[in-house]
Length: 360
Ligand code: PEP
Ligand code: MN
Image (cartoon, rainbow, N blue to C red):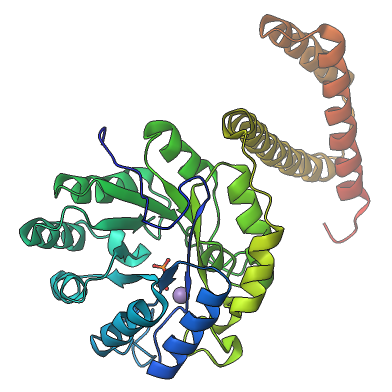
């Protein structure tokens, strides 16, 4: 993917982040036109709305279908905004292209499916619309190669105005985020394909409107090229993703408080390095807690066998061998002793806790 073209639109400042905003779903003609007008008044130039909605379970609102394309055309004609929608199969692509949609994006459930991606790519190829802008969301699962594969299929269809959207990754259970950001994955994509624009979708990562601003800021700090944000004229009454949508007015407030740094290169490299530190610290904590869990198991064993917690011989052996290993890895003996002692103290404390706990 060497000869990508920048995603620029006439009348939109190419130096600024690309901002795409609009409701999760097109619901009614009135809702689409009201939201678009309000967004246009705040200076938003690219309007999004889902017409075909991939829902987790049947029975929910699955989008208004092709009828919504007529509303999008009206948005373009009345506000002058560029229009964007999601496609998931051949018919969607054909209908979106016939409506003159400026940007199509591929959703996270679709980009995880190579058959669907190939069908979309073949349809774009057959249509000959190589100046179309196509954005590919990350697949729902944290698989960078699958994401790259989806992008490559679109690239091979002749699309050069190609971009990626980071919308977070599914996970089991309840978490702060609806979809885990796992920032290192889009960062790795950036390192592999430096000319590929990457937008952030803070709405689907956060799943809650309060998280849009911090996530959007974080993505700007990491040098993302733009945002796609869900905005609805009456968010609480939205037919899909109500909790994560904001009014055009609130969106305008959020965008005005965003700090977009110009010295991208330096900030970006520093951010990448800090990201690595964050990841390594997380790994360290994880490993330490695994070590403590083993210590507690040892505590249970010692309790059962009436052994003393601290066994001097074993302790001295540990210190000696680890200090030497640490030195070979470039760390001073003083530092190694301090760290090992602190870890040992905490292990002992946890074992004593087990021994004194009558329930164990
Ligand atoms: C959407 O953008 O409304 C959408 C369905 O998103 P995702 O594919 O990221 O779940
Ligand atoms: Mn949505």
